[in-house]
Length: 296
Ligand code: SF4
Image 1 (spheres, rainbow, N blue to C red):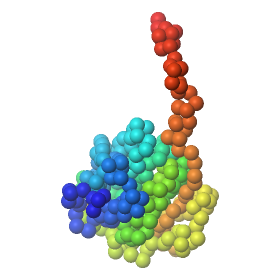
Image 2: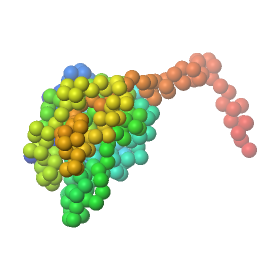
Image 3: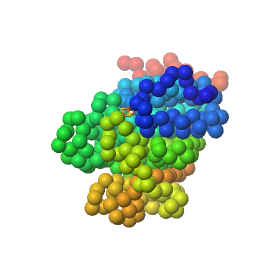
Image 4: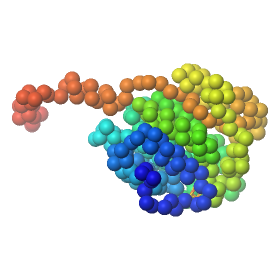
């Protein structure tokens, strides 16, 4: 209760995104966060409304701009736990240019993407993660593109924590989100999150019995980057009938932590620079003298 706001969600009944609210609430309470210290940022889309339902500071930004807003928070208030909630269209299309740079710089931000494989708020257009052949409102003959492999891209971009979970598995989702929040550095969780209103293919019924836990069932060690990239390259196999029986997932959708490594964060590097070069008390530079060199 402490971590939920008084505002009632306006999502459709049965929306997969409810599972993310529950998982986040559990993660915050187990971390014993002070609600007045948490900042959540989001862009535009159904899932981007999520900060409204939480008792935390929220910044509802323009479409695709949740990550740079979070970076601003980290630079100004590095003591603040910072969570970004977004949808697949918002982050991987409009805001795509921000993802690899925030990841490689290793800002201490948790990014949770609710991936329903289409744009829902604008009523069913294909997104970068839509299946090949998916029929949206603007392409009734089916998507002629192939979907984007977000897990492989996140590892290749330098994210130091990369995972996938499912909103219909509350235990796995809560554990994964908590591990992401606890991770020091850029953590990314892609949540397979059905939209029962528009997407009639990637449904709760579809995912039932079609998930495989890469850590528990395949014994994957997330510290092994080579193994993580190999597994990540098969994340979308189940989209294609000709690959349905292919190893290692045999037609199932993988969930679990693909990659995790400890690395100095951007904020820590900034703090070191400040420590080394910022003037000590009583040693302030003579700004008039410095600026005189640059004046015409
Ligand atoms: Fe959820 Fe889909 Fe409804 Fe949006 S349109 S609130 S994604 S069920």
